Image (tube, rainbow, N blue to C red; front, side):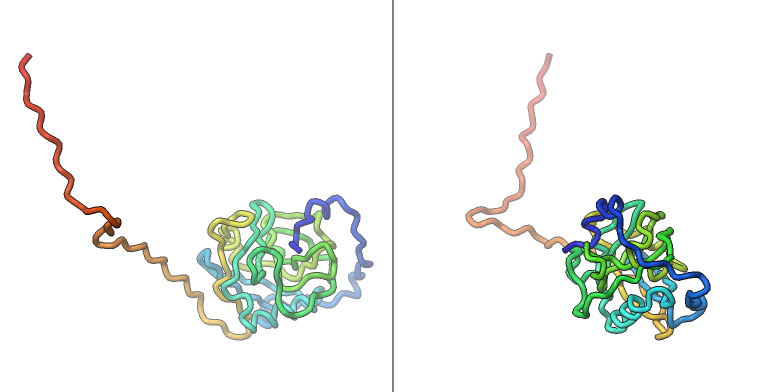
Length: 227
């Protein structure tokens, strides 16, 4: 089971959509300064991303994000599917798009939030009620997906670090979430990953069995010739 495996079909298919909630019946969005609804992602691409969560339209998915984050579930997970000009997908402990948490799948919470740049939504399989731990961040608008996937937040700051996520399906050197936090839990300042040490070569090369090492002999000098 691979979330987004049927993306092309999803664009062409007619999907049943729940009756939209009238504007006057919508719950108010949390204020942008509400730290209880700010998801903090420290990325290996060099900085911190802050996502405004929307429990007013996707309460179950937001609660799942908070629960898994406080369990350190997302720490160290890679972005396993990143399509330039489309989205960056992560949140899979298997790192191949087939995994999720041990918690049960969630019902769809399709809503009026659009797939604009920076939107954060729940990845799922073909079944609508199959969102779990995986999510994707939209790199460029994809309004064809509106009301077919659960949008539960939007990037507030650090979109440049999202843009820098290694591309590929899968990427050769995948970027990862170093740490994830909820802002109200007073996360520490961003700490960059230590630079990878360059491999050290042995002082002497090993001798293959049955061979000996000897200094290379200089080529014999050619005698000068007269014309």
